[in-house]
Image (cartoon, rainbow, N blue to C red; front, side):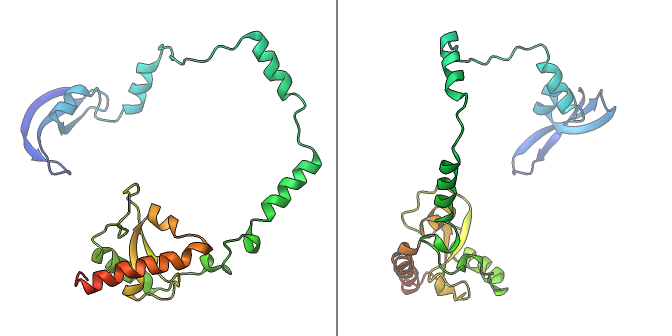
Length: 203
């Protein structure tokens, strides 16, 4: 691209002040305004972005380091894989093992509760709970690994959308609540957190 003239400072979408420039794209024959620093580095306004990047890679050797196996080692690997097929008996055992942990046979089965739909009013109250909890996970032991937030029903009842029964958790903390044997513990655990917030006048 050719720099036609330097323009004034402008605020970008992130709130930073940037020096702009008017450029002429020699590929699409158009004038474009771009950040001065970026425009001076670019060959096109973006119309030839992928074509140019592929051209620059032509003729370049890919530097992939592969482990060099000896001929003897290759033959041994080949022999080990030849005729390595599962017997019908072994396949049947795998099918039975898998079927023993699906649906109603799974130890965490709760009568299909996970397939129940949320009531219509849940979407409305969901935003209220997120705002109430300052869009942060309310578990004091949260390690902050995930940014995605969920609204957890403390008593595991999707129809109970009382604000005292809802709490904001990150994806990681919410995943810890899954499991039949964990429900009593996490129900009491998060009830205490919500109760403390109410008593502290934070809600």
